Amino acid sequence: MNKKYAALGLSAAMTTSLLAACASTEDATPENGSDSTEVVNVYSSRHYDVDQELYKQFEEETGIQVNVVEGKSDELLERLNTEGDNTEADLFITSDAGNLYQAKEAGHLQAVDSDVLASNIPEKYRDVDNEWFGLTKRARVIVYSKDRVNPEDLSTYEALTEDQWNGKVLVRPSENMYNISLLASFIEVNGAEEAKEWAKGLVNNMARDPKGNDRDQAKAVVAGEGDVAIMNTYYLGLMLNSEDSEEKKVAEQLGVFFPNQETTGTHVNISGIAMTKASKHTDNAKKLMEFMSNPSAQEKFAGVNYEYPVNEAVEPNELLQSWGEFKEQDINLSTLGENQQEAIRIFNEAGWK
Ligand code: FE2
Image (cartoon, rainbow, N blue to C red; front, top):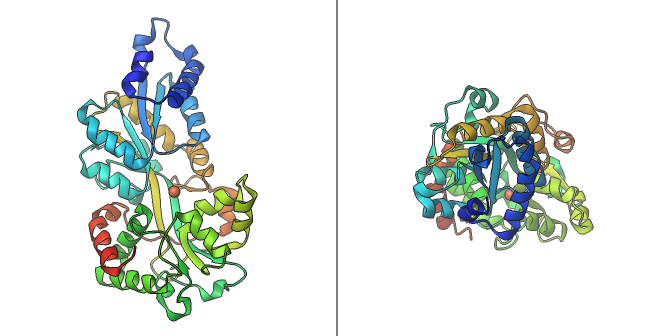
């Protein structure tokens, strides 16, 4: 058994958690020895306890052991590049349709034909070739200072380029995939020319040179560096429920505004799952994908991170419901990958650091 974990190249911490997970499934191991134990190997950039709980539930229901390697998305992708056909990974779980697109472009994924996935996951949240599937949705919105901004003054992403917001807009650097996908979506719905105008206009209205992550933009709004920030809603959910009282205090002073409700809709992205081309346990991998798309798993999987479930039969968690329903951009998320290179070009031209 140790040999297998070594082959996966796990860190000490991961091995410990795997052994713990393994111990809990010993009952499910067939009498005739561990060689016949069914397994599925997952590379995941998610790192939540609830994911482990779901894997455990899957193990109990199916007798298939789930081995997980956690890491950052780009590190896992790099690892898939290095390992090629020799990879142990059957499944790749990561955030952003842009990252899933890169895995697809690199030739690491294979199409999965599944009626369960097709009925649980709306078409716009699946790859056009069925090489990846969305699991959770995240909305990239305008977050504003409740003290200084009247939400009635907010309307669209485009309106943030107007004079009223000069020196008041906060957003992270352009190298970040969330922003690349945001601009890729604008190329899709408005065309490249308008997308470029938007990027230039936003750079012109920035409160500071872009730095930090989404949470840092929220903190900067509360610190008074700017009045509005473009960020994903789930960070606000995480901050509101944080054990860090400072983070909580920051989030309490911020409001959520869903832009473009009268026009093109709010930008939505996903985290998703894909089967590797080199998978040696395709049946087991497909079973886990289907399990993750079912309502009971969806509720937990999305809820813990304050994301929206992709399965429309499942209600978002209470906090998300309190922010209200909203109209989403009406595009297939495959286009985020297809427009990725153009988005990067436009960011460079616009001088978005
Ligand atoms: Fe994130």
